[in-house]
Image 1 (cartoon, rainbow, N blue to C red):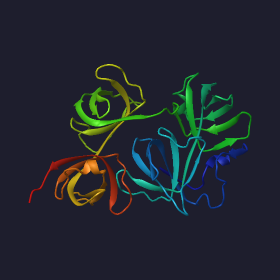
Image 2: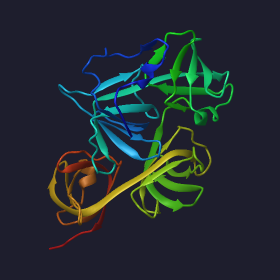
Image 3: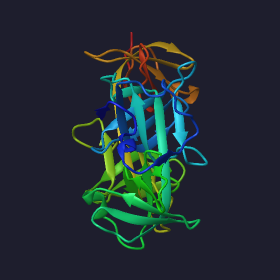
Image 4: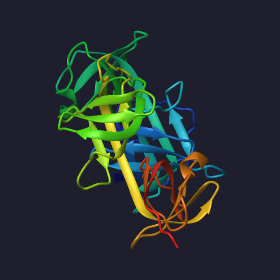
Length: 327
């Protein structure tokens, strides 16, 4: 997260530029003081986008509706997708919730995909599928990860010079976004190399964990990490072996839980009263509510997203009754 005093500082370059996008810039488009948060999209709903920043910390970017609606600008024909890199502009206010939340004034996602060539210390050429050649300005850290012939997606701020060839400055470089698939279930075995998950559709699945900087991202509210009995969400690229058990390579594994005492049960959920913390509204489908009674102590697994409302709200993926209070 950083504070900037004008949007798109790259406009200071000597070369003439053109801004790509669906919105026409006006004096009111960019406040005098703009804060930004950026990262890779891990979840998308109509109300928010969940991103992982450069430190793999989650941030919930809330989408505003109404007169002050969030402006979304993207070059993606089908809209922003899982795995895309976005920049969200907001007013500097960030909640202390888990994950922290911001209310987006504008979200941008501009991307060019193509083959890498002509790598130098500061630039490389990206040739898109339609034959367009673009000079990409990049950092030394970004450059050293590239190989001639690589196919890469370059995310930038929407500004492209009018020179020939055109130039952009890379905010983020990654492999092209592919469809992301998910598994959800209880963990039955944990090792350093893999976990076994009992998925409701595929049954027992071995989820392989990749090490290293570009390895599997693991997020959990437990200081002890993921353990047998936990319910986890696994994101993977859709490739599953035909072995027994079938295996997938995890891109991300998440396990967010809250525990507390149930009260104020309705058809759509209940209040979760947490010791020493604010109560949270748990939204859950009817079949997940079976057997839950006032006073029961439960553990709720959710996706890590929490609303900024009072009380805060979460959507349950699984509810386990730990203890039932009997009058």
